[in-house]
Length: 212
Length: 212
DNA sequence: TGGTTTACATACATTCATGTTTGTATATAA
DNA sequence: TTATATACAAACATGAATGTATGTAAACCA
Image 1: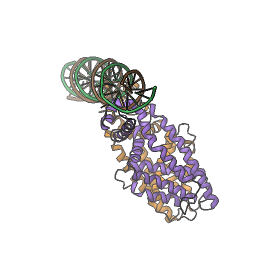
Image 2: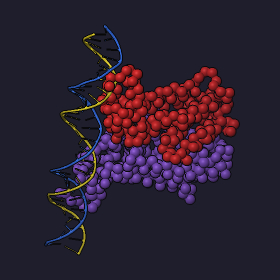
Image 3: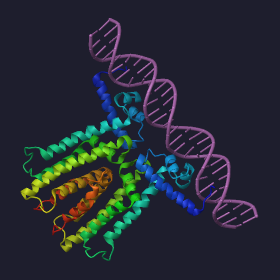
Image 4: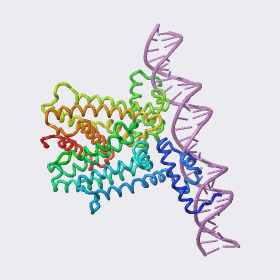
């Protein structure tokens, strides 16, 4: 039996992405051969080359599967018109967006593995260099959203008004970016993973005029 | 002419590290062959294998040449007994330590390139995985120093006292860690590199009771 | 001043990943 | 029902990197 139905093929494709993620995590992207990925998915390299042009395209497929939904969710939390919870002041919105991302990492293995691959098992050169630009672009988008949230917070008087919203926004993004990097590096979780919740709350508290 | 004097050999070794750094930056660590490094340094692979066991050892040599002095300098700024400048309150100490690191990146090409290699042109698996643990260890050390500085700041009344020094310290470290990551990724410098100074100042201002 | 190391260069053997090409059974469309 | 496109497997050809082994001229030491 060789030829599969369309759904079977879609499953094979998904299994390849799944396998790629796991082997990437273990061996690093560049040391992972397409043969390893194929056999880990229970197929041969023929299947890989059928579904993807090469390793880079497989990598991008893996990345997008996690990052596109994630960015959407962040946007939702930060921008949605109707208030999501009782306390939906702008600062709480930012806090919730950060906490949600951490929660997603805690709950979803694929997301966690993808982050880890992206942050310490990949070299951003040649065909992979584009990712750096995408990261920067995404950065700008997120910072803008934080910024407008901080502006509103200052107008509402719940955040200190003597610092520029733009820089507050960048400070938040840099904090969170650093947290994610450490989150995946933190082997036993004692340093950062277990404290992530509290660290986010502290970060936001620092900005509140009430300071609590 | 084959055999060189001891000093010549030391020069060759240094040239190899220099060459490795540049090719790593361009091609990524794993895609860089020892042949490329050797020829870029004007020697053959024989020289590489004479001075280093393999690529990993060369990588670690490159890393240590930049990171050991850098850690020392940070410690000096944060801990030195005598006050370095007129305003050497603990918060200014932290600020200076961060600013100095950024200045070093601005001034020294080797440091800059090494950081960039370490943060986006290297896969931390197998022989390179040890670096992750070293990073975590170094992390703990730095955070402890920030922490005691924040403690002193709170006792002096120059920093808000309602947040734990430990978490303030971690917030600072995560901020700076994120900044360094973005610093190297920021292609044209418009997003983060040019603002680094101001971002650091803002980060510290947030902590001051005077808030300015 | 001769023997021994040193600091490499050169040659060799092996392994392994990649991309492409070809083969093939079957789903699917006409 | 048959022709064609699909979803792979299998075979092939190529290239490149690694580690080691060997060669060697000059520095260094006794």
